[in-house]
Image (cartoon, rainbow, N blue to C red; front, side):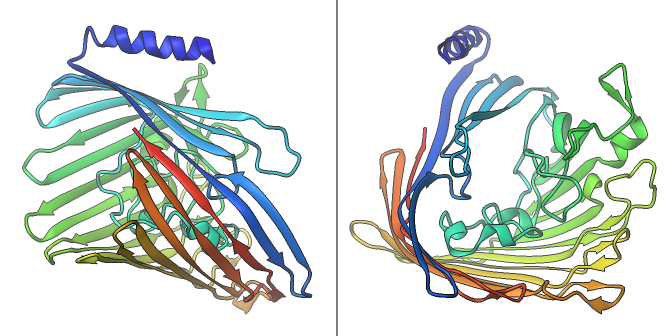
Length: 417
């Protein structure tokens, strides 16, 4: 670790001789749960505690970046690391994933980036609460985002940098090992982007494509999986955008309304189809993703703010199993108020999951509902944020089973430099 830090510092100092500006920064977050009470349907109580990230995984999440920028060229190195195992008695490990890319602007309107990157220029503009995973159980959401729910509205370039899988639903896409991104800004307000990823890794660790000499992949496969999007800012009105996400076989449309003072309103839809080429579209050929509609709003008046959203997914279809997804609806609201000493707020979340069908017949035990609520205080200390409160997941029925009642006392530390 000392050698790695030394290398990073030396690289930053060396780069400063070439680039007009070199910056070093990062962010770190972690949750301490000093008390969790779990009450099963029979009334049995179990009390536990933990240090974790908000999804119950590693104990600490961090990103450290070095950026070198001149007028026409630059580089970015971001190391995303997580420490911990997340399972009782599991070995503690460090998992790291670097984002590394270089970019150049041969023309004022053209930018080329090569490496591994993400881009949020067109992504959804209304997100979620830090406490959302303690209000709704994220393990029950496999078709809608919870922590990064802004991507329900409109997906970022590089839809799933982590590559959780390739055959589950809207959330999942192959991991990207290397890509090229080309962006154009030909006129004021217009952004056009193409994300081309030759190397896609499946959930089983295999490359998705016919490799040659270890690093070259079938060109038809590559460009069939392209992600291409554009957005146009209408001054005083909002941001309209559209994109095609090739490896998900989805077209996305969204509009952010900014014309109303103090209101940020963002609406998006996703329209899928089934792949039509079994040989070159092995991932999507048998899967039609859900139709999806999402609306998010963030409104402020004086010291009061309310963030609310609704996300709806339905009719995803798997040709192999002949299973049609039921409706999945998530509604979430976060009203808050700036007091003299801190911000106080509430979290309210609800999910309804409709029944799936196989061959037109209902599949038993595939529907359910979950509900949760929380109250919290948040205060900034320089570059850091301290947030703490009490949340609960309440005992509604899920897949014909009574659920536990869960009460959490989450305390979050978040620092960004």
